[in-house]
Image (tube, rainbow, N blue to C red; front, side):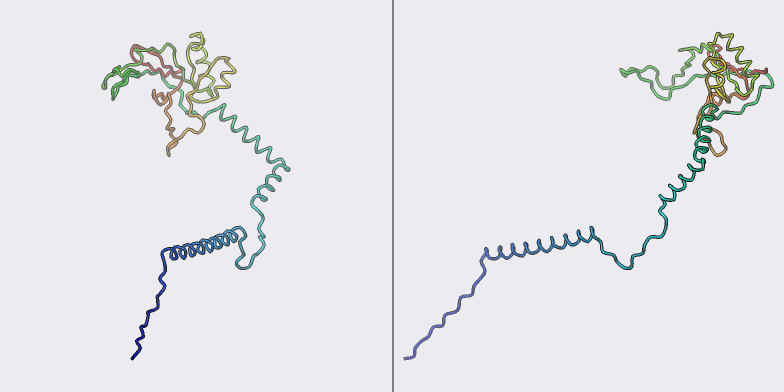
Length: 245
């Protein structure tokens, strides 16, 4: 009898689901550890950078040291005090004598009129929304509030204009307003012991390429061409007299 042998196939081990997860977790931990080591190494390199190439000592003098040495020299020689005095003098002079306008003396007396009326391009509303003035309305502010004082424009550097304005000022019992277009309003106030105004450009006033100031002044608004000049109300207009003295 032939003996029959049955060959049994060997069982192959297949990985279970749990084993796959453990392998993945192990690889993830290894990746995290390697990444942490690389980051730590880079951080250490950024804090303690290693030189690349030859390092040479800086021979140039520090700019801060140059500036401090210059300031020390200026202070020791007295130049700094002199510079401060000059700067203070220029600043005080600008305050006392703001940039003005050079206008000629009037060679004859002439008069003109200025209409201060304005026309509204849009409705003027009250706080409650009611229309006060519809668009297109023309309003003369002198009808709302008149000009009770005369405005006297002079150049303080011209003593004849100053004397002429002083007489007009006294006639009004100091009610008129004397306005300078040039000169020192501070000196004139100290002399008269009365308030004096000025219609000058002021510090830092902008100008175009021709030097003409861009800021609106009363001289430009009323087109005053010569001095002295007086502005006062006459009816619904402002009368402007440029007076020969």
